[in-house]
Image (cartoon, rainbow, N blue to C red):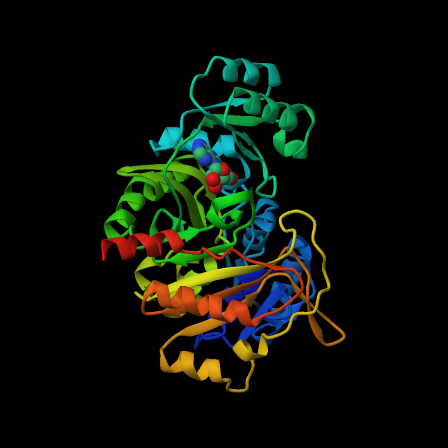
Amino acid sequence: MKVLVIGKGAREHALCWRFSQSQKVWGLFCASGNPGISRTATQVDIEPTDIDSLARFAESEKIDLTVVGSENPLALGIADEFERRELPIFGPTKAATQLEASKSFAKTLMREAGVPTAEWETFDDANAARHYVKGHRRPLVVKADGLALGKGVTVCDNADSALAAITDAMEKKCFGEAGARVVVEDRLTGDELSFFALCNGEDAISLGAVQDHKAAYDGDLGPNTGGMGAYCPVPAYNTQFDERVMSQVVRPTLAAMVAHGTPFKGVLFAGLMVDGERIAVLEFNTRFGDPECEPLMMRFEGDLAETLFAVAQGRMHDVSFKLSPRSAATVVLASGGYPGDYHKGLPITGLEQIDGAEPSEVKVRWAMDKIRVKAFHAGTALRDGQLVTDGGRVLAVTAMAEKLERAVDAAYEAAGMIHFERKQMRRDIARRALDSVARRG
Ligand code: AMP
């Protein structure tokens, strides 16, 4: 099979890395890729949003399967265009991507489907939104309706901050047209989790829950980022939990999408808030999460190309993969200042000890301990043969081991061997889970 992956971050690197191990894949391409990806896939110099050029490339190369990493090409209708040209693609149509691209669409669908979610109202008029806030006693969250690069959500401590968030989104247009409409919803408490399922329209297969860490600094402090780390499986959430999410969230959502005339094919990513027995959906995304994809791909056992091809064709009975019962953890190395301003072009050193062809002492030790380590590239570039930083998130260092604690230790050991000026990372990835495992003894 010839496979094309669309995107240029650590998520796409993890997908390419897993595809490169598939027996069935003899041609692997990535548009537009990065220096890490170029070691496993042929880099194609087409931007992920240039749909016409991507479709022409897939046609001329006779690509058997295209997999889309990020939401923007999906929201622009890449799956519709590929389907129109009869090019196999794993990802939802533009209409089905509304689950992520419009919060009000997702909320209305959840209401129709009986999927548990916070109480909410949608507003196109700022005064009506303010009136709602003033009459409401419970804490609120204000969300720009459209795609706002993950920045359109304000979790409010009081009515004043909700009123300010409405003004910012609807009148100051801080998120452009994405904030012309807002969803105002009740603020929920509990554990936040990401949940993934491979969907073919009517049916779905669970990939289970992954814990990510959104805040920039230790102790969940500081501004929200794209994600500073992740791990799975999540000790407190077992297969029974999986089945509850599949029956309360995933299957009813798919059924409602079919009834709506917009069947959902691809990766359904439900952002959940879990409080004891109560599960509520905070948001849907329509693709793999980044960094959640990295530990998931580490644990994926089976042929990824065959799996996604079978799901794309609706042949769920042909899908046979397993997720390793071992634990995988990802630590993101970011540029100092991220998610605010940061420098680019800073030299990165130390990666060869982890990723190089030469056997290093640490690699031998990890191999003896059955620990797998991989540094997925997020924002890197090559300048005159030197690897340099080229984004807010630079590398997603991922390790897998028998126990979560060993995976986390190995990820941090590897992260400590990689250097660039003003390197920033969280030091407490999976800390809460490890503490509660230790408490349970
Ligand atoms: P979203 O893009 O809707 O997932 O929102 C981004 C982040 O805002 C989530 O990951 C949560 O941390 C937070 N958030 C969103 N909705 C709520 C809610 N109803 N209650 C509490 N926190 C929320």
